[in-house]
Length: 534
Image (cartoon, rainbow, N blue to C red; front, side, top):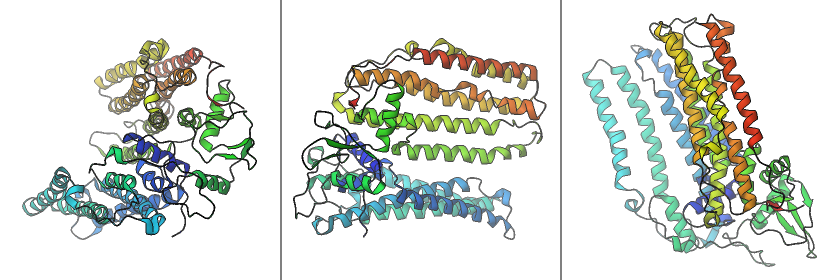
């Protein structure tokens, strides 16, 4: 099998996976990186392509399933409306399982003859009783209900269409479960054996047994064992990707906090060659924008700042994908609301509804990536994190932000209720869009205010203060008021003078809040430690 070089995202994902289970390490071994990175959400391009293909195939299958309505005696309106969701979930499960199966095969090939000869654990040690009960209730109970509905009610089309997608879900779950139970033990020592038990299912993995070895440079003529970490691998990977290298002589040895493999000592023992990853370059840009110049940022700051400078976090891929899948499914079904009884197809459905859903997707994506970077930093800090209380909300959110929240959602709700009381169906749908925006902003602001202090020294503490104040900008209340402009421009919206004043007031107060919040952001202290100085 072709040699697999783990990506940067997989290295970070494997470290986070181990850290969540009480084993903090800077750089996991290459073998464990291959297995654990994808289990933490890291998706290199070689795995993303087949996952995306599986999702497209599932959506195409849902379209084909809908075509069954053209069979004789079948009424399409009686088929289950949840078929798209079923196929979407099946595609997501199949893509995730393929990534795990592929990486486990590559890890087994990496071990070769060094794999431990251990029997697979019995299925009772992998699956607990509640999992089996859930499967029986879902599929056996659902099948019994569907068959009863088909035999005793006139809703036979709904019954067989639901039984069909339920059977497909049962097949997918059976394939995944059988693959987990029949997978051989993939380990070469007690540490990787404990990880294999944890990765296989809910069975216990002794914490004391997971003693990971940090890699050493292999001696000449030695065959590097599979437990060797990614020092040499990461160096080859960066050279293959053609990442730019900058030579910096700092007068002291490189910081041990960062991941090895990006600092290559010269043969004569001189200055190290620092090769920055894409995440580190993003963190350097963030620090430079705040008046601090470093040659190599600290590892914790890299995790937090790279996501705030446009570099997505691999751990957030699954959450972002699911949120976008749900929102885009809602967007696809939004136009079908026109078919509801009592809804005028020309004027009752807000034209700005699509914009509100798109704004929700954009804000949630930015927040989920920032949250993933903070969680990675918390794992990297471990016990070194300073025990500082969270700042009170009054020090984080200024009064103008509260004003724009009150105007956008409180004022909009009052205006919508007043219009709905006069019989406006448009106002009812618009209140739904406002409620969606209120939930999105509440989730973001709650996450910012409840986030613990992530710092281990004065420099990272200053960065924590700045990021907390700037993350308030992720909640933009006025973006859920602006879509009303589409209805003001393209149709006769009810009470248009009031709606115009509402939009103008929401946008103006949001701009003032943004400027006021920006002025509250302090400068980073020059004497703080942010990484290796240039």
